[in-house]
Length: 96
Length: 426
Image (cartoon, rainbow over all chains, first blue to last red; front, side, top):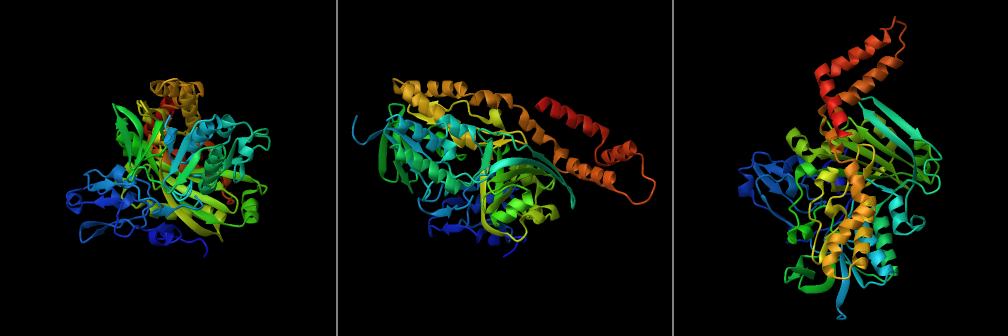
């Protein structure tokens, strides 16, 4: 592979994840998100895990880079819970 | 003292935590160093430069053992226009001759080494342990909780990074706010060492640190590039508040920067082997919480929001190490547990960390200058184009030409306002 523009999915495919199936470490309440007009999460999540689907915020925790920006920038409180993944789960950085 | 009680439990085996654990263990304390990742560094991302003096403060000569990447001998500032780029390159082979000034680093290697140095001095290192909470008794913190397990100690050292959940649980301060952080994204791009050395005009053990503006689509922020051994770290730090208002996804803006002709030329033929993101404390002294301790606990490193960013100098890991040293010295000096906190603050002063933070306390004002991130780099490149163009026509008088370029990009009022902000900030 040579240098090219990467989609978030392509960039994340270079990373090593151990997804904790069934145990999301971030909980998003879409009913709260429905009344949010800022929706910072859509542009500031580096992994682009927040998407707009049929006008609703959808969130996928697999692929989280564990930075915390979505929690810090959430203005309406739709991110109701943000924890680090349980030990041994989540991303393992090898070269950063 | 009961067998199962530690003198100190350090939460987080990053540079701050490991520096603290190293010094405590070296001086004979019974230390537990906990890390949530499978190995130290596996949850960490940094731009990638460590200023060496901090390791020297922990122990003279220590940097020589560290798995550092390339000794930084070239400091570069890049101003990006849409296609064009102007780069200032500072090179002095004698800069930092005796003890080198700084090295590029890879955290998975650096943090793993540092934690094991602490272990070699006698600290107990346990990885894959996520600390969920604190144990409190009579208004005093006496240990930590991880799952069903409780571990007890005289002092908890919170080195749990920018998200600083432990300090929040202890009621010391609240969650960090968007205006006080930068969100960094970074790709590690693999390239042969010989290619890196040739492209950046350095020897194989020497490296380059580059900062760039004009690559954030007008958002407050800037890019960085560090040469490692066998890879290049390339990334951008964004002000997330401005990025949110801007509306374009930050990963997309980063990709645009990566594909800028002047950047592609440096990384061409390489392979992206990792994509990471991390928040950094961005506003320096004004962002440091008032309370960094209570009885039974001190907060160090990114968790305490120590950071200095002048635009040219970006510091975090070195301050983390110094703060870890300060906490260790405080714990060693204290005769009673309630003395640790105040002694820690004294040590932060004695080791000059707070004085340095204060010296730069207004600097983040520079990053509020809106024109710095688009108009200024654009006009710099236009000025270069004007100065270097030879086309057989009678040239515009130089001063007129340059003034026109500046006026075309910035009004007089904007220049005065920007100049005033720079003056106030520095």
